[in-house]
Length: 97
Image 1 (tube, rainbow, N blue to C red):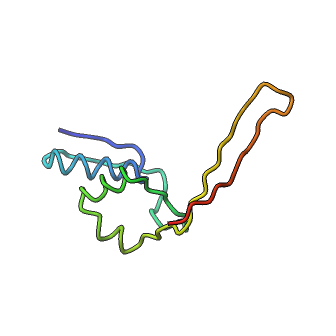
Image 2 (spheres, rainbow, N blue to C red):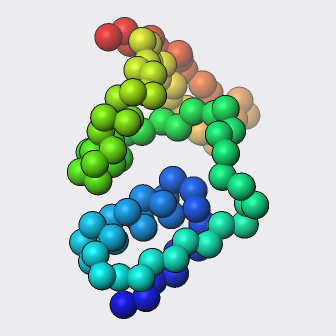
């Protein structure tokens, strides 16, 4: 089986790892437009399901090594109405822990 994955971002590389784990004989090629893969200095927010999938692919220890756990979460609620005031933003509501 030959598989071509277009995009070497987190989604494309995760797809390649998952496919390799389930179909080890597959010939997988990942195409990426960037000439070099390098750190960009930005963060990636991983929700629990994504963390679980990456852990199942054997990346738990590496993720734990580089992860920064949030100390505070902010939730915003946006309400859009047809009134003249338009959109209303309620929040932030801070949740610690």
